[in-house]
Every structure is written in structure tokens, then in C-alpha cells.
Image 1 (cartoon, rainbow, N blue to C red):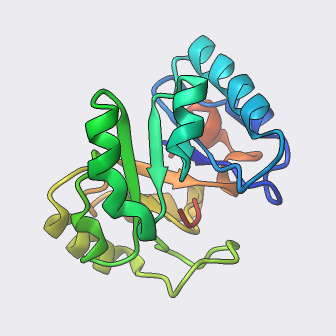
Image 2: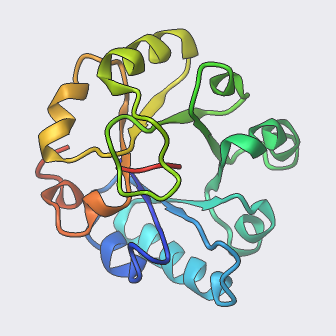
Length: 186
């Protein structure tokens, strides 16, 4: 599972991160916040204690400063993955993919969205499970489903080939964050 922070929809990312199951990842998206480094360091401490990974969204310099496990790139920055990989070969690098062309980025995994209608202000037209499955088959690397994923919709993703789900609000009060079940735009 990938938990995407959002300053508006998840104002207390540490509380959510503290409930995630071992093996999940936090994607901290600072969006230029003045306290980004302090928040990232707090999330890193939680990640280490809980067996999580910490990825920094769209800011490889911040990721390096805080000792994150890698970065998540929005689709428009996915071509930078090659440069980042050369500089940080051990990092986990993920990228958003909103169509088959973007999914060709040289990354460890892609986050495909939006799958279902989402509360994200940037969510596009939902792909739906059938188009998601077709895209996952063409991608050839691990893919996560993002956008409108909930306990109700997650079951519709079982046959799509995704390796996991990603989200923002789904982790706020969901048993998904506590490992009792199996998100939004990257």
C-alpha cells in the first residue's frame, strides 16, 4: 500500500503513517511547505519504527537531505528518473501514470490513476478496472491503483494485475491502514 499525503485532505500525516501496516510506503508530498524537512524527518522516524518506506514526492533534494528511501515523481517529471537513478542507485523510484505512454518511464513501479471517481482536485476521468487491467498488462513493471479506491471498490481490482493500492483519504479512518483490508491521484 502507498499512502499519499495531502496538506488539505490529510493535515496530520504522522497520525495516518503511525497506523500503516509493515511493508507499506508513505509518499510525502510537501507542495512547497516551509516545514517540509521537519515533517519528512518525523515521517522517516515513523517509517523506520514501523517497517515502512518513505518516498518524497517530486523533490529528490529533500529526499537526499532526510535520508528517504526514494522518490515518487508526478507524470510530468517521470523522465527525470534516469538522472535520479544514476545519482541514487539504491532508491525506490515510482512515477504516476495516467496513460500507457507515461507508464514507460524507467522506474521501479508506476501508480496508475484515476481508477474510480475520486475526491482529488486533480483526478481525471476514471479508467475503471477493465482499462486498468489492460494498462497493467502493457506496463511490464509493478503497478499500484490510485483514485477512489476504498474497501468497497478494492475487490474490483483483484483481477487487474496491480500489486497494491494507493490512496489519500482511504487511510484516514479505514481498516486498510491497519491491515484489515485492502486511493487518489498521484
